Image (cartoon, rainbow, N blue to C red; front, side, top):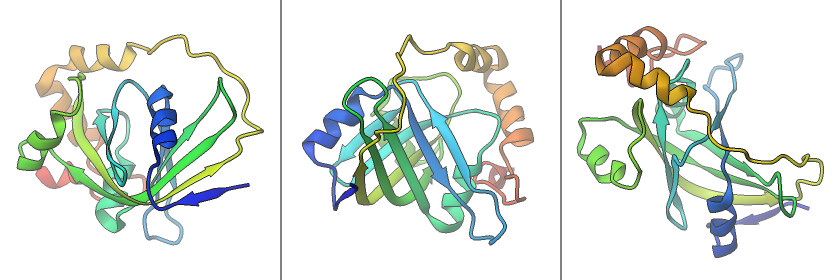
Amino acid sequence: MAKQFSEILPEHKSFIERQHLFFVASAPMLANGHVNISPKGYDSFKLLSSTEAAYLDLTGSGNETSAHITENGRITLMFISFDQKPLILRLYGKGEVILPDTERWDEYVAQFDPLPGARQIIYTKIHLVQTSCGFGIPYYTYEGDRDTLHKFALNKGQDGLEEYRQLKNSTTLDGLQTPLGKLQ
């Protein structure tokens, strides 16, 4: 049975810190808009307090979350146990996009190890933590992080990444403009 909490408890923090993968969900206000669910890896997630979290968002093929939370703030982060006691943990909150070359970027980026291709930080003010059983989740074994995204970013270089972001990350599937698109 699901249990709800107003903040991240120490046992939640411990569980989150053991995970190698998390998922981000967001949606536009459009009734027929696309719901986005993105898997995230690497050491890109940080708990900042019992009601705050952030992740270093890397350049990828889309940028739905950024536009959705700029439009309406809604974001859900989900962690799943694949190799221990079954558990699903969701963090519901209000998100904010923090871009490079801002004061807040300097404040938050210091929380993370440098990762190639970092394009923004997604900050979340958490208003609800929910756990559920996870009994239907299969066992999987973590073997390591892929280096493909890192190689992509390094091969593109900073100018190539900027060009790619303007081409692939400035609007959503529904035509919403992302904060990166507003930089044009």
